[in-house]
Length: 117
Length: 113
View 1 (cartoon, rainbow over the protein chains, first blue to last red):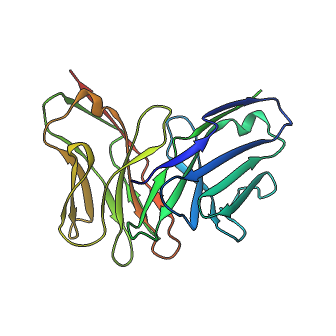
View 2: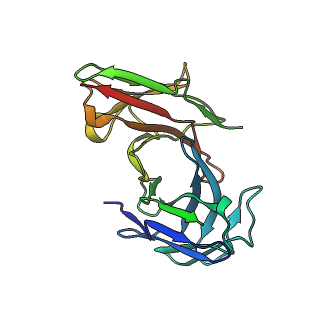
């Protein structure tokens, strides 16, 4: 299989606090993981590409200091939304690239709904 | 630049009828094409892909897609729609240089009983 998990599935926090979202590939190793943001009734917007053991590559317009990404192992990447504000409320989805097993496919997590009050 | 177009925001079909969700692409080189489905408040589920080989690709849940190089299309099809197929469908192409997926805008499929 190719299962990607995300935790938490839903989080509500106060403005100014930080929130960490975990993305795990459960049955394969992923040197590359991706973080997306999705607004209601819209397509996915790529935020950054996370590479194991190196710095993430952010898309244009995404604040590196606000959205901290750590890819510390071949099965785990984390996204930390620092000093969250209501405009950061969104649906965050990660994916993991299944390159090593040759499927050349990104598998997606179930998403995390962030609500900042 | 590589791109994917899904010309229909919504497709409506009666249960039991065949369905088609359209996708056209623009890439340089050989395309890696994917279809994903998203149910409400969920991530994307992989349905099928075309990388090389047979132009007709079969995937999960009875879906299939046909790669048409001359028309630069990769339409998603199913012979007999189910109400449970109602969801948001995304076509995507993989950028060979960056491994990023470039998504279409999505098509909402509504299957009526």
